[in-house]
Length: 250
Length: 161
Ligand SMILES: [Zn+2]
Image (cartoon, rainbow over all chains, first blue to last red; front, side, top):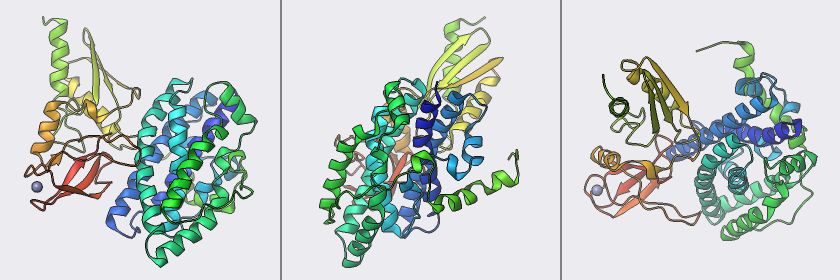
């Protein structure tokens, strides 16, 4: 198994891990108890997906790193997540729009990964596909309710859209790593997921009385390890206990 | 001496007494989490499957399965298999009846389009079909919170998955 394949796997695994960490930031702070529980549930699913993929990436890398080593002992430039998921939570509208843009990608990605040539990845993806569909139902519902809600909720959704849209397209930009992974049948080519994602996002935004922004120059680099300073802060919090007490056990 | 078939049945019987940590009125057999049992002499191999990727109870289930079989078999091996993915279609008729008796609605009809959901067939308390969703996410990964409009009681619903 080549480095390119491990790298391609980390791009998905890290996106899930970083999003899970962001979502847990809502625990105890969501606007309603039901949403607090919902966000924690989504975070748990996405974390579970990340754990499976990180474990598999460690096995394929064959350098002795397990899921913990990969999650807690890498620095920001070693992370391969989408820039979208490291964006701060902002308000509830911002978090829900970020989740929606992610879920709309995830529901395209997982069914493809479910037919990966790697049976372990295929198994993880088969479960994740069902979970992502449920998450999408929830996040799309909130984008519609807030976008087509009060003047205030519409204004906030609009502001979130302006803020997050430039990060939405990175998931669909191919590079050599992606082409190698696709060649090996490990993962789909990112660009092949764009049409489905775009159709769904445009339909939901329109339903939400939100404009579909024109394609900007998509912000990119996360999948190659070039991150915003937001990731460094996130990792500092996520990794602090593990790094302070190496090898500690419950 | 018991026959191999008897020992397999013994293993299933013991597994049938292992409650799910998060839905303790049903067993890991009722839920379809315990998938396969293979016995070879004093060695038993149990295949279990996680429900949701984020289900935090998986390790506990593995531990409970070991503990339940340890008295009967010298060697207990637990294998975790992901594929094909667990579905609520594997919940047994007995499991569904037990859920209902404990006030939890079993999975209802799944509606296919991605953005529409599934719904419980009836309120587990009074049987009314007039029910509405309160929240798509509940106290555990596998449940949603619903309310009956007839008896006005809220209830847990195991989502079709
Ligand atoms: Zn009722």
